[in-house]
Length: 129
Image (cartoon, rainbow, N blue to C red; front, side, top):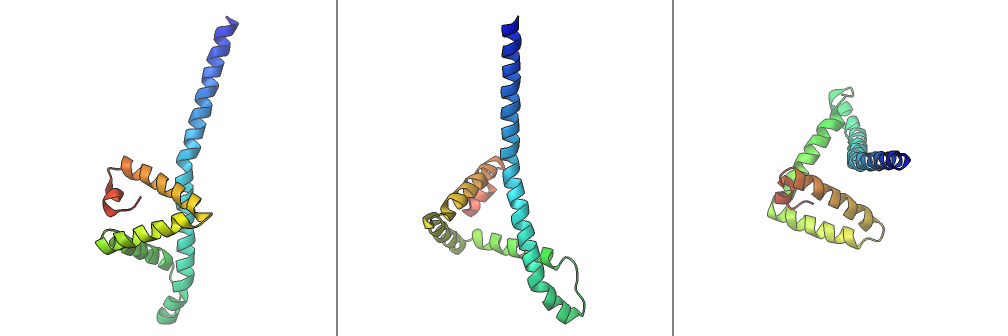
């Protein structure tokens, strides 16, 4: 009787551990994406806010968000054409040769590839991931 309850407890603990680790692994790309987008938003807002204030006379909230959307759209345009694919291949090659950055970059690229394959391959068509 004791052996059966111990086995059930171990199975439950293994399930709990595996599910918890899966949750952490699923959260890492989301959290990383949030921090990268937040950093870009704050940076672009800091760059464009003085320009907007000069032309409009006051600061406008959301300038960084508009700039971020335009930047991501332009990157998408570059990534989906032939010249952009070549530039991305060169960039990938450079990043994979940089000593410490290559580990971070290859890990994020692998994670991006996992999400792209799950979403139907839209990123694979553009040459990303």
